[in-house]
Amino acid sequence: MGSGVHEQQRSLTQGEVLPLTSSSQSEGSYEGMKQTRSVLNSLFSGALAGAVAKTAVAPLDRTKIIFQVSSNRFSAKEAYRLIYRTYLKDGFLSLWRGNSATMVRVIPYAAIQFCAHEQYKRLLGGYYGFQGKVLPPVPRLLAGSLAGTTAAMLTYPLDMVRARMAVTPKEMYSNILHVFARISQEEGIKTLYRGFAPTILGVVPYAGLSFFTYETLKKLHAEQSGRAHPYSYERLTFGACAGLIGQSASYPLDVVRRRMQTAGVTGHTYGSIIGTMREIVSEEGFIRGLYKGLSMNWVKGPIAVGISFTTFDLTQILLRKLHQMGFTR
Image (cartoon, rainbow, N blue to C red; front, side, top):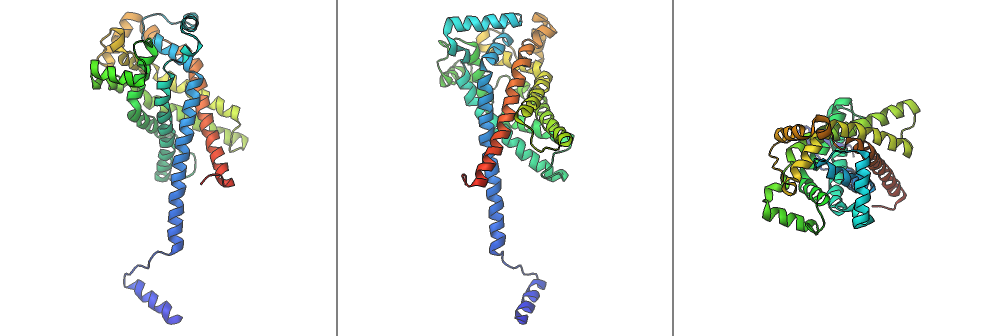
């Protein structure tokens, strides 16, 4: 037995490497499975969060887009009249027109955004030495911005289609595929990416500040209360604050994006971000033009973001509990 130990030591001193033991291989395999499960959980939770949140505020979102792309002055009274007229003319479900396109876009968008945020947090946490802990402020902001940019880049044409369906009658575009086909044939494939630049410029502060605010409020809550997990109503409140701050910071670029996306059906020829802003300001004024519909966004935005963050967190917690109980693999 002693000679075996000496032989092994001699082998190691000569630069030879012992083969991996079965326990080392099992540990590596377990870590890989754990990481894969974490990614899948994040994708599913994000998709569900986006679908629930957007469906809840779809009528308000559609109304906001209609005002954003028109020169009509926005007010709460006019918004109510538009919703009521739409209901009388086309029925209750017409308030959700374009929501199918929203779901086609928002499910992959939210899944990618939340999953990317978790992965960016893990990568930045490892880089800055905060693995498994709340990131410092700057990396926290960076993780949110990178997550939003990643999701926007991968799903942008679906956002364009959704905007077109929201502002046009159903006779013009019968379904999502019809929108893609008509835009490609009549306006060119490049049109599917019209408004892409303001989208990316807007999503950096929006996603960055939204995730940053939500994560910061959860951190402060844990420090003050001593509870690692906030109650559901607290998560909704944190998410509402995150949505309010994020959307207010990026709103003018959201208006520009909608104008450029719907230029083909509104008769305008918006060509650039600066040009679009100048035209909006000259025709409608700075506040009434670039911030048109913001008050409605202060209603729907916090609700949507609050529901989204809360649904994601609670679904993640549920999936972890199910796994611990042996219901998932």
